[in-house]
Amino acid sequence: MTLPLILGAGPAGCAAAIRLAQGGKDVTLLDKDETVGDPLCGGFLSWRTAEQLQRLGVDIHAAGAHRVRRLRLFDGKRRASLDLPHVAYGLSRHALDSAMRTVAMGHGVNMVFDEIRGLSEGAAHGKARDWQSSAIFHATGKHDIRGQSRPRNAKDTALGIRLRLPASPERTRLLEGAIELHLFKGGYVGIVLQEGGSANICLAMRKSALAEAGGLPEKLFATLARDNPALAARLGDDWREACPDTIGAVPYGWICDTTSPGLYRLGDQAAVIPSLAGEGISIALASGVCAAEHYCQGHSAHDYQRNFAKKARKPVRLARLAWHLAETQMGARAAIALAGIAPSAIAVFADLARIEAPPSLAPR
Image (cartoon, rainbow, N blue to C red; front, side, top):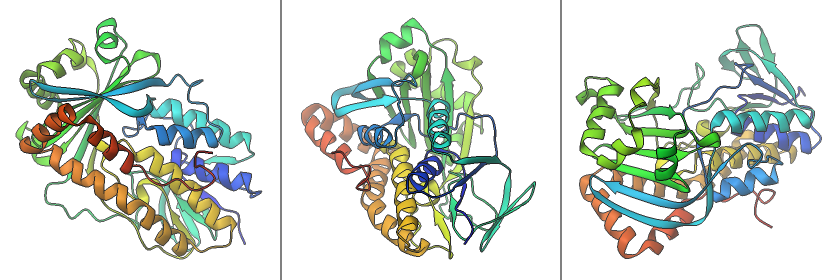
């Protein structure tokens, strides 16, 4: 039997690598980039995510994570604010992925670099060479590998646009200790401070919303800022200098419940939860650890995929429901009203939308 091969050194891949190494396995962790990037998705860490990272030996405080205690909702001039059930965090993917790679290599994981262009049974076909393994852990995030594409059947697909804005006293004053969701027809903007006080501003919307702005992210942000004074205040005067990052055709709500022999699909290759829930990294970690433990216990990739799909179904469905409601005017107004009248209901939903962690990652 060949050694386990993990494709993708993001949270899902690193979590699998760490757990496999802890189980005494020799592991190869492959990524296309030797320099750690800053992927668009995953800049908010829920309390469950923070607990899971701690169990894996990842110190998010040393990485500079920004504490988040409150949720603020905005719909035009309407707004509501409530306490989160537990402390959450803002941390860039660059900081998180760097910390997780360090922990993985500290466990003896072999880190290699290549660009994988295709998969076949027992092999990953890279630009530099072919990599043979009877256990391939597919953890390439929202980027598919040829031959393993996820379905994108929606007529009006979801898109993501991210701005990273530098620290400023005014943004710190407005955003300290909070995560904000600015709701509008067709989508929302999520804002949170990260390490060093920089602001992570993520816009999730339907393709049609961008089309109405002529396909120009700058025009879309300008229109939203004009119609939403609170958002304009957060963007400040320097947002036009930022270079937007984009990702298209995100299959929110998709769950993989079957797989090929020896292929363990992790993270966004296992389940794509709408980003509104802030649970993407937790699903990545849980899937990586769950897959590693299935492998160490001699269970098949199919057994893992079926079992993880069951765990992911409830949080993904709840997040999808919240997403569909939030992108409508009526749903946004209802969320603002509910947060003001019964904030505990929002807190209960936030807890219900968390994925059940594997026993090795669960709170003790």
